[in-house]
Image (cartoon, rainbow over all chains, first blue to last red; front, side):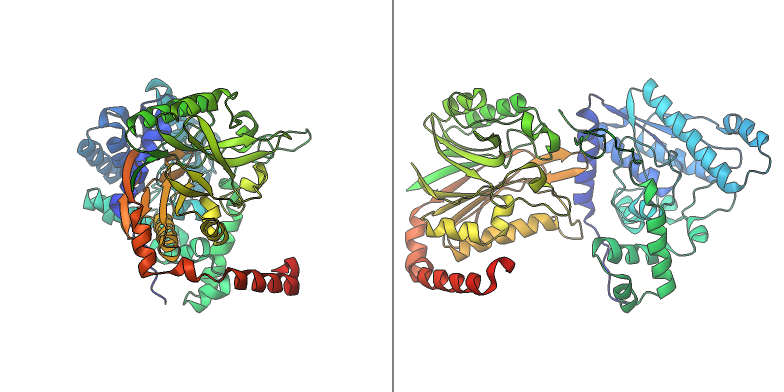
Length: 275
Length: 285
């Protein structure tokens, strides 16, 4: 396989991403951010970036466990909270989601996981009101491209500093920013059910798929060219299909156009309009 | 003769002309003592304007409320500013105006509007249709706006039209983060600026803005090169800054004595061959 270098300059990345957080929050009249901190690497990195960008006192970290969430996740989140010195709240979502689960005893783990992800989103947005803050998203580029997220759950946020970095680049930047090694080294997991791991569920490692996505997306390789570069054909085709099938999670839902000027088609402004 | 040019790599507010104008006046004051202050592309309006274009336009004349103030400031220091120009027939251009001693010496309308990938300028702007050098109190100047200098022809034409000072202004979205110290987009722009200075034995200055618009970052990194292609001055990446570059115009004499590329340029050959190529291939080129 060709040598595919996903290495990034962490100093430059840090400067751009902290600048992004600071600018895109303050220009809309806010000073603060709120985010869910799971104890995983993505949200930990985002917490470190936000604390550096805004000052730790201006970042609220939320630990939102469910009764089956791993103790380790909670502990790792606390390590990150202590290391950055941000204020935090721990809110158990069990009594919020349990009544819904009880109504549908046959609910499978995927549905339950989606409900939990959306319940957490409700708390981020509610706490953002209390804390006068904007909610930060923490999903990375790999996850966004593969659609490995819950729509209107963890994919709902005001801004996301992580979303153009592949998982392997998140690891590199996290290490450079001093994220504890125990958080960097553990297997990534959505922790929506016991023993769940991303790589187990996806069927490939982030290291493999990041290189493939880099060729497909960043370098505009065709499927054939990826195969020629050394990737197995079923893997290439499976990933391409996955990216296509999940595109709905990445765009605003379509509005039926009937007027002469329609949001999303010919009413075109950036969010930063007027700021 | 030596001149000092001030490269003002500012951030702008998207669609808020008054605030941006205010910043121009502050920077012009700060640059006092320099002969010219150069602002980035669309410095009075911000970049991803989309449907804001018609509401942020200005006319480069003394009866325009924005230019009235800029022209007044230009009595103390020459200014090159980027703005949305509306012409008499209500076409909108991505333009740059050179102001000196209360007069508009030149307006350049961007000739190449990038409309691909992340760029959508052709959807909102009319393209300019001329490339002209012009005289200033500090030498003959050619202005190109961002994509204009990604095509070799505008700098080439400006060179042949007598410009010894090429002023490039841009809003370059930062991209291509890899293991290097600078973004790929920064290195690309630096390469071409340096190349034009070397190939045309001319001074080249580039001013690119900083800040963010939604998720786009702009990397700044203003540069000035002498006629040998040597870097004279460089602004920081990703921060507002006013960088002063001293241009020793006598370097033109020394460089061109050593390297008479301008003297040897075969313009008649270019015209003949270009005519032949266009005749043979038509517009399918």
